[in-house]
Length: 165
Length: 290
Image (tube, rainbow over all chains, first blue to last red; front, side, top):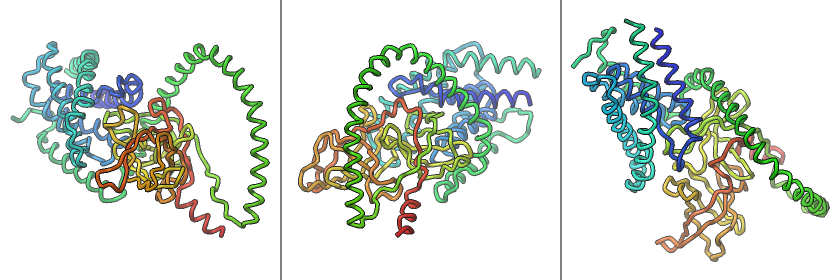
């Protein structure tokens, strides 16, 4: 129960930071995506089920406040969390290479997914523009953010795991 | 592949159920007016107070910094403004006189008043789109304050966007620079109709698309004012959108298109005004008073 409350709080705080503070820190109107970092981390730290739930609620919050189609982001984040859950078995904590790699891939998948669903469907074909202007800068910024925030998420998770056993 | 969980529902079933649920919600919100209903209310009580707090703290800090920086600038500006006030008072008097004259003449002609006064309500921007693809933001006024979907939002005398979703104490606003925004507009000078569309590709240069302009007499040029048109179903007539940046003939040789620079600085938007009259309401009142 305590775990659920703390995870819920982390989702809320991430979402709030994302839509307020990070928007103020945006470089070239590109801001990092903390929700992907959170979803992906819980996926590989805790497995498929927790990954998909965290992703679902992150996406749902984004849908409620900024979405056009309710459920679209929820599905995307949910699958990101779920797929990251497959890597739970080769995840050993201290090493930061795997998390960085997985979060980058997740972020890339999120960017490509958004492009396909929201832009390609409306016949905006300038893929390379979107790739170089939005997807890649967001990816780089998110990876930099990961170096800081992953440690926090990891240590919160570890202390929760210590308490429960 | 199954992990041993404390709960015995395998995660792939959870995934399947939630996917189904989300796709259902997507169809529901696409086909009907459903916009989250109770979810908007629940999230209202959890998130909006905190968001307001963060925003208040942020703007407090910002204003302290600005105070120090601005003091000197403000002093010199004050001098200038005083001179300007004197000048403008004089000008205003003449204009007032002319207005009375105009009213008298209008009465004579028995013309209906063209512009009814629009009521506005100030609101703070408390959050911006968490992704980088679109340009939505949320404000701290909602249905409790009388905000409704389709109300126009303005700032600095220019059009900002339109309310697209409303919660009890918050509302979602889609700005005109958003990639999905499309506003029916006209050139102020000659009332030629056109469309103003947001475009993510042009956002970098800070411009918007200007489409389907007839301009048969080749009158429109750089710097002309573009305002919302009278044919728009949702936007009030005559709100300033921006200034024509460049314009060129389309391949069909009939219409022109180009770009325009918005009148509002979207990067530094903190407070906005919501026009609390809906376009249809104003029209209805106008016909009633006839």
